[in-house]
Amino acid sequence: MTESTKTEVGSYFISNYPPFSQWSKEAVSEIEAAMAAPPADTPLGLYLHLPFCRKRCKFCYFKVFTDKNAKEVERYLAALSKEIELVSQLPVMGDRPFRFVYFGGGTPSYLSSRQLHRLVDRLRANIDWSKAEEVTFECEPGTLSEAKVGTLKEIGVTRLSLGVEHFDDAILRDNGRAHESMEIDRAWPWIKAAQFDNVNIDLIAGMKGDTTEKWEATVQRAIELDPDCVTIYQMELPFNTVISQGVLAGEESPIASWEQKREWVSWAFDKLAEAGYETSSAYTMVKPGVKFSYRDNLWRGSDLLATGIASFGHASGVHYQNLPEWEQYLGKLEAGELPLGRALTITAHQALVREMVLQLKKGWLEAGYFREKFGVDIIDHWRDQWTGHRDEGLLGFTDERVELTRDGLLRVDSLLPVFFEPEHQNVRYT
Image 1 (cartoon, helix red, strand yellow):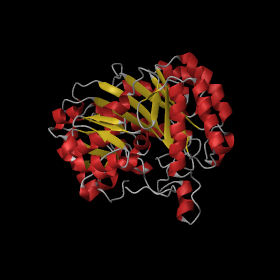
Image 2 (tube, helix red, strand yellow; image 1 turned 90 degrees about the vertical axis):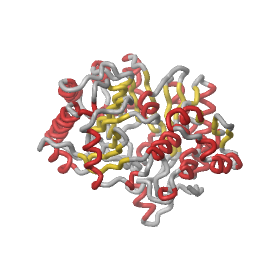
Image 3 (cartoon, helix red, strand yellow; image 1 turned 180 degrees about the vertical axis):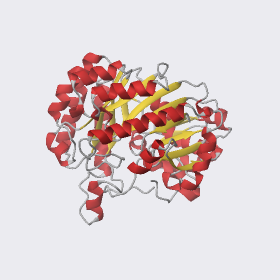
Image 4 (cartoon, rainbow, N blue to C red; image 1 turned 120 degrees about the vertical axis):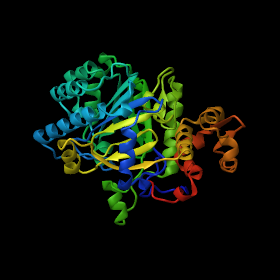
C-alpha cells in the first residue's frame, strides 16, 4: 500500500483478512453449515452490537442510528435477545464458555440502566458469561450517570472503554462528537470509584482542527486521569463518513497528514512511557500487567459469535456479517431466523496471513508460533517482504523473530498488504 502524505478518502486500518469486499451472500450457506456442526477446539467470544448514538460523529463509518424512539429501541433489544437465544442453541457453541464478551456500538451506554438490566436478564436466560476473563463495554461520556456506571459493574463489566477522543471542546464540536470535556470530568470519578478491572480511554490523533499544542494538552490530560490503558487511533477517512463526502466533492482534506499524525502519536507514546505505560500494540499503551483478551484472542484465531445488526464474526473458519438494514435484520429474527447477510470460508493459508498481519500490530512476531500452528516458516516464506521493510527502516528480523521499529509500528497498517495474496493486494478493503 503506497501511503500518501495527505489523508485522503479510503480505508487504512486493517482489522481482518481476506478483505471484507470479498465476502458474499452466496456463501451464507457455508456459515450456516459451520454453525450447525460441532466446534473446533478454539476459544469462543461474543460480540453484541448496540447501534444507538446521540449524534453521528463526522468521522464515523459504523452502523449507527440517531433517530430511533423508545419503542424502536425496545424492538431492537427484543430482536437481539432472540438472536442470542438462537445462537445459544447452535452446535457450534459446544460446551465452550465465553472467553470474552464485547458490547460495542454505536454507543452501548446510550441505553438506560433499566434497559441494560432488562437486556442482560434476557441474555442470561440463554447464555452465561460468568467464566469470561473479560467483559468490555464501550461508553460515551455524556451518556453516563453515577447510577449507570454502577449498573455496568452490577452486570459484570470488567473492562470499560471510554470514547474520549479529545479534550478540546472546539475539536469535539467540529468533529461532531456528542460530548464535551466537562462530561468526561463529571463521569471520571464515578468510573474510578466503581473499580473496574481495566479502564481504557480512546483518543484520536489528527482530528479536524487539531494542533500540536492541543494534542499535547489532550495527552497530558489523559495521563493525569491515570487509566489502565490508552488507545490512540490515527484519524482516517473511510468512504461513508460526513467528512469523506466533503473531500470526495472537492473539498480539501481537513485531517492532519500521516507524517503529522505519526509524529503526534510517537510523542504521546514517549510521554505515556515516561508515566509508566508499556507499548501493547501500534495503538495501545498499558500499565504493566494489563491484558486485552478481546484483541489477543481475535488476533490468534478464536471464534467470535457476532450478534446485532451488521456485526462481523467468524466460526470454524467461516467469516460472516449480519444483515445491515434495520427491517431486514429485525424481520429475520421476528420470523425466528438468524439474520446472516454474507460470508466467506477462508483457506488455511488465509488463516495464517490473517493471524500474522494482525499479530504484527503488536510490534513483533515469533516464528515458532506459526511453525507450530500452521507448519509454515513465515520468515522464509515472506523473506523478500521482510527484507524490503527492513531496508526501509521499518523492522528488523532474524530466523526466529520480527520486530518493528517505532516508525514501522506507527505505520503498521500500510505494511500489511504486501503479505496478502496477489488477488487481494489491490482490491477495496471494505
